[in-house]
Image (cartoon, rainbow, N blue to C red; front, side, top):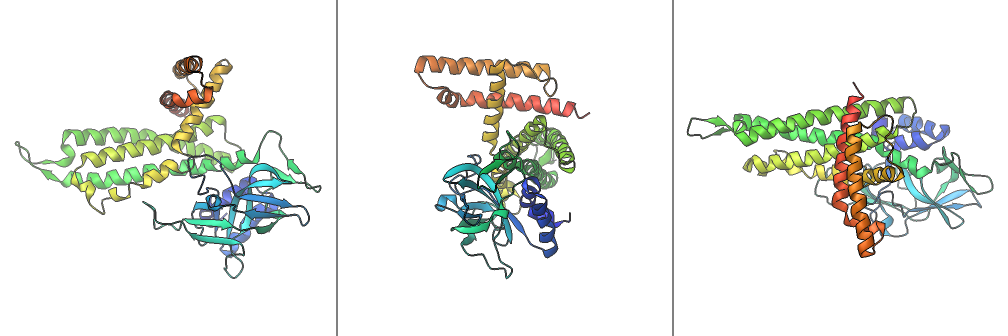
Length: 409
């Protein structure tokens, strides 16, 4: 696989994960022709913090064994689609419907442009508009108006439609949308690394300035970098960055091993990648914001890198919103607690497990009291306790990092 596969991700990654051998071979043809791909998942109405919400539909037509892709309203238009204005093909995620029944999000590999480079009939693309950051990127909005595509467009490694027109799930207990969601794993590692790269770049440029910036002192000239709170900030963020770089690097190493050997990541690795995404991005946001506040008017000047700090906001929302990931961590841990709280044989240190269990007990007691005294249901109680939910996730993430890194040595 050549370098063009990097430009096709996560389009190519989804084909590799969900496609049959013939569909995977189509990637080689795309590479030989120099064709570009894009990944059409996020929709305008769904945004990026609402999970895998898909309103674009793919209706099966039994008479000619085809699908009709359709965006029922502007909110269902695909949005934030990188390379969407120039791609030849796309993996589009749509709600599969058979005989008026929804079977949830499925992936389809379709053409956006014909052999002459013209956008195919029924597809419309446009620039998604001015953003606060990344306006050099060709993020597109893509809409489908009753676009007819062949049955072979469905990436059918895990699910298909049989000769009688019935839905066929090939692996029991493994819905396709779970496999689509797994394509976010490489993206989570990449986003974590991108946030760290931005952080390192901003700190390196700022430190080069402050190392040479002379400041007046009653005891002679000193450099800005030697002012106590600036020096302390550099020291603290250096230590934090070293830990985070090691952690996300270990996530990348283990994920690459899974991809090379065509294995699904373990649940420990899945959680670690979510933790890496949250901690690297949120840590970089805090570190860069603190640097902006402490370094003075230098941070107001164009060309310093501070004008691009909204890039970290993009990282916060990309490949799984940080808050959504934290909610999932806490929800999954609470389920274990309520089932009996038996600690896994590996993956969590006993001390960390006890801290998590204590936080779960506190949250359960607080929710139970609300339910009893106020007559609200458990979902409302969970929402009311959102601060405790996020505090539990912080305990989980700290324990995950300790256990994950300890097992790598």
